[in-house]
Length: 150
Image (cartoon, rainbow, N blue to C red; front, side):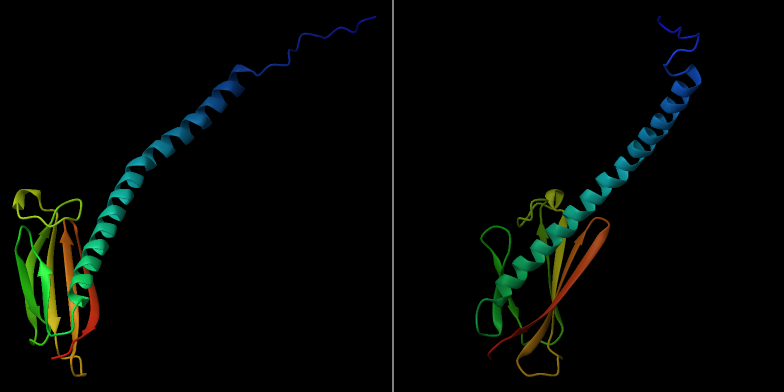
């Protein structure tokens, strides 16, 4: 003989289903709410990376050579000489576009850069180079020491 099942079915009740959908909906809303924060964090990270790359480029250009006069490329066919022996001198601004290339058009510039030279390091023929890279909302300052032969 086959036993009778009774009136109770094995599915979910309406209350259980609504409760489960409410929990899932709450989780989805929380995740979607975090998306703008994640996008802003990614943008900030890209700006910080670009600023670091610009500072490394300038540091590389200033590190080449042996004398106190170093050359820094500027937009177009121009360049500027930076004298590492001068006491507390600021060079700039040098402007860069969003891709990190040198920029002469002010409407397209995203990063502005100043190079400051300090010779009061306490050691002869050693200059402190401060590279300031400013972009909308943040300013990064990178400092290094460069030795030169007079």
